[in-house]
Figure 1 (cartoon, helix red, strand yellow):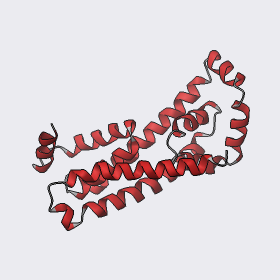
Figure 2 (cartoon, rainbow, N blue to C red; figure 1 turned 180 degrees about the vertical axis):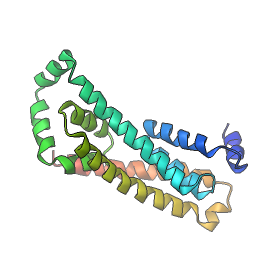
Figure 3 (spheres, rainbow, N blue to C red; figure 1 turned 90 degrees about the vertical axis):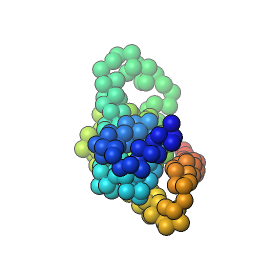
Length: 192
């Protein structure tokens, strides 16, 4: 299967639209993998840079907005409201979250494991959608651009382009990103 995928990409006959859709869908599963994959595809000339970045941003933004919407719709369910309000740490978490709202939303974008809870909580406590989107899109633009640029630049290196092991860039870069994410998570959660 890997050989089929490699040959399909090497032929340059794959529709860029399908690659764009694939990046968007991949970002729903694992955002960092979508960023790395898009950067590798762009560095190998299989996808224009603009389309790769567009796919990343559309996937991440719609995924985050869906989490916000999930929280917002949870407000309508009485059983969800009661359960959350009875949780011992809910009010403390809500108060801390609302204290430095933009900063917390910005940081949550970089901390795996907090995105789902934080963005759903944002919808549940009815944060203004404009504030939510501005914080999330700003953080997404910074993180995605930084990671994309590094992977793209590395993927353009002559010695890597000349080898048959270019595909190894994806798992190696993903491992590096996950390690950085764990470090950020430990550092951020230390204060709480």
